[in-house]
Structures are given as structure tokens and as C-alpha cells.
Image (cartoon, rainbow, N blue to C red; front, top):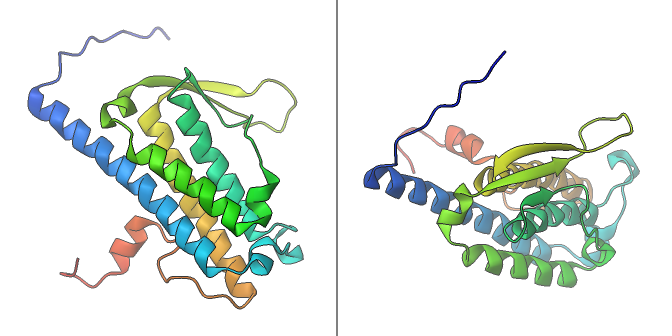
Length: 194
């Protein structure tokens, strides 16, 4: 099958403004996810944060949290490169075991996001991520920095849900909307409330 290349007309000013507003919403959502992480780190004692749990595949809350931060860091590194590489993450073990260190790392990533120019989210980028269990090269696909940021937000919410379960299994209580997707929060609200 042969692809036909379609040339699109330039964006109208109104459409360009709408896209910048949407990009700002994405950045704000990413900042909010990291703020929720900072709140989590202030709530949990180090023992709860770093305890591995056999029922959860011998993972820890800190391990899940570090995994989320690594993905945010991968996207932010992609703003300086032509590729977002999810396969070559830092995996700093201090983030898994030390909530104070993790909070500092989170604050740095959040500050980087707050300084982003929303127009940058439209920039094309390659994304590398191993998706096959067969040995070989990681898959590389075309994307945009905005799309990758949307992915790490959704990915973070998913891991926050796992963190919530692990916290509850240890007797810790987290805020009721931590780890719940925004669409689910909206769906659960009574009609007419904001």
C-alpha cells in the first residue's frame, strides 16, 4: 500500500492558540502528577516507601516511584535530543530507598516542566521503547514531545494506582484521588458539581 502525502494549510491563529492552550494543559497535568508525588513522599515513612512486598512481585513503592520519575526524565531529556529513550533510564537506587532524595529529584523535574515553552510540545521526536520479549533492537517510532508527555502522565497515574494498593497493604492511607485517572474522578463526581 502506498502512502499519499497530504500537505496541510497553515494553522489559523485561533487554532494555533487552541493548540498552545492544550499544550499548557498537558504541562500543567504533568506538573500536578509530580506535585502529587511530592505529597506522597512527605506522607510515607522511609520503611513503608522502601519495603519490598512479595505479594507485589517483590517490588516496593519506591521502585514504582523511581520508575515513574525515570520516564518523566526520559521525556525531558528528549527536549534536548531528537529521541526519547525509555530503555536507557538512569534507575538511581537512591530514589527507591530515600524519600527525601526522591522528593528533591521530583522537585527538579517539576521545575523543568514549569519552565517549558508549550510550543515545544509540537516538536517531532523519535521514541525508543522495548516492547518485544524477543531479543533484538528496541522499537523506534515517530512521535511528538507532547504525545510522549501525555504517555508518561498516564503511565505515572497507572503506577500511582499500584503504589496506592501497596500503601494500603501496609496500613498507610493516601489521598482518595491519588492514582485515579482524571476521567474516573470526573465520572465519579455527582452531576452538576465541578
